[in-house]
Image (tube, rainbow, N blue to C red; front, side):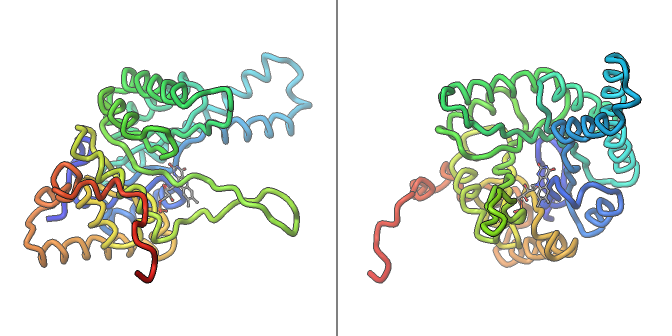
Length: 324
Ligand SMILES: Cc1cc2nc3c(=O)[nH]c(=O)nc-3n(C[C@H](O)[C@H](O)[C@H](O)COP(=O)(O)O)c2cc1C
């Protein structure tokens, strides 16, 4: 039995297909379920993207938009079109799939975060994942203020959204332990550790900013593993491992450190939906080999709370030099 429970949702497998290119049409969503996914997170709705598309469309239609009220009407109806399209996919996914369907939101203003989330809950979303990571590049804003904004955002979202609620977050905060425990106190049901955000690069021939690799490497799971190991025994919120989980072994490691589930994206992009089946099979076989009948028997076995040498999760230095 590889079933698990994540933010109050019963999952037949701890493997969730992460928000991204594999969760933006119904065919892929069905394939994810058939391959054994425990849940799917739909591709995020990005307000930023909607706004830039809408303003481009408006520029192209400038000759028709002779009046400012016409512009406002055009902008708001175009925005609604995007949201309607998202809700259509969500409704179709809910009708077709029997696994939980989580909607993912990335908005710019608090009103939009809440508006989108409420609409998706009404439309049947089993949960809402907030894809939250404003980059803190303003040198006049302190780390404490960044945390305050994050927590105020989380509190408002919690107050408004009456559904299982998770935040998919980054790890570049001055005190993650503080932030995670405060998010837990606010009553966030799940924390996805950690999102892998867009990484900038430079094209040295064109001498311009370019996109870094969108996919992860298989050794990128360490930071999530560490923080799940450190925090899972201390909070009520469920943790979900993400980034660099490419195979069954890394999924088992996440569960041992205390994750209730894992989100995968790159593995499925690179190997197809059968990657989910392989991860599930590996978990089952590993459980059988080690004598575990259910995931609850080993989830968190190596969390800091449960082991004598839990200090190892805090280790940051290589104490011996290579070759010694
Ligand atoms: C092409 C692409 C698009 C993505 N789009 C989203 C998105 O819309 N929302 C989101 O929360 N994460 C998005 N992600 C991030 C993935 O959900 C995931 O967090 C990340 O790829 C790390 O997991 P992995 O190592 O299994 O790939 C995207 C990733 C890729 C590669």
